[in-house]
Picture 1 (cartoon, helix red, strand yellow):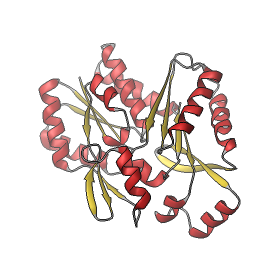
Picture 2 (cartoon, one colour):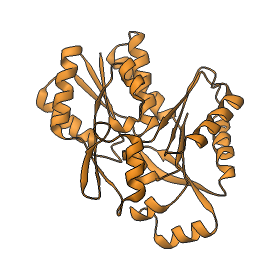
Picture 3 (cartoon, one colour):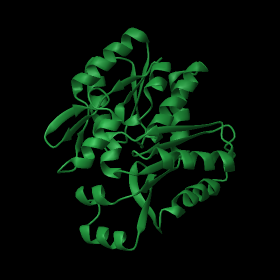
Length: 274
C-alpha cells in the first residue's frame, strides 16, 4: 500500500524517505513571487522571506496535475493508495484530491486529517506503522478515524501580527493583547482552529501545555508526541525535555512548522500534538 500526503504534514525529509511517502506540494506566494513548498522553498528560507515580506504570504492548494503525477507514481508502487491530507476546513486540498481520484478511477482512499502540520504528520506515521503490521486499507482508515478523533493539538502564538494581517484578529484586539502581554493558546477542534485561552507572559505557556496533557489522563509511555515550532527550536527543545520528564513517552518528534501553517501562526509559534 502507498501513502500520499501533502507538504503541510511538516514531516522531516528523512522520515518521508524512510517510509517511502509521496508528498504533493502546496504553493506559496510571497510578495508576488511563487514557490512550491518543499521543492524550491525550504522552511528556513520561508521564515527569512516572511520576516521581510511587505504583505502576508498566501498559500494555495496543489494543482490537479500534482495529484495526477502522485497517483501515477503510487500506482506503479502499490495496488492500493491512501491519501491523508490537510484539514478540509483549512484548504481545498482534499477536494482537489477527490476530484482527481474520480478522474483516474484507481483504488484510492482519500482521508481528511482534520488537522495540519505535525497533527497531520502523526496520522501519516500511524498509517505507515499499520502498513508494516500488514493491516488492510479498511482497518487502517477505521483506526485513523479513532486516532484523529482522540488527538489533541495545542497551539501557542508568540505574536498576533500574522493573525491581524490575515484578518483573523482585529488590530485593536491585537494592540490590547500586546499591551497586556497576552499570549494566545489555540486548539484544533474538528478541523477548525479556535481560541482556547489567553495567558499573560510566555513563561506560563509550557506549563499550560503540560497541564493539558495531564488532563487527557493517558499513559503516554507507548505514545508518540509531536512538537512543531515556527523557527524557535530552543523553545521546542525545552518543551520536549519537560514532556520526557513528566510523561516518558515512547518518542517525541520535533519538526518545523512549514509555510502553510506558519503563514498564520507567525514567528515563534509552538504546537504540541498528543
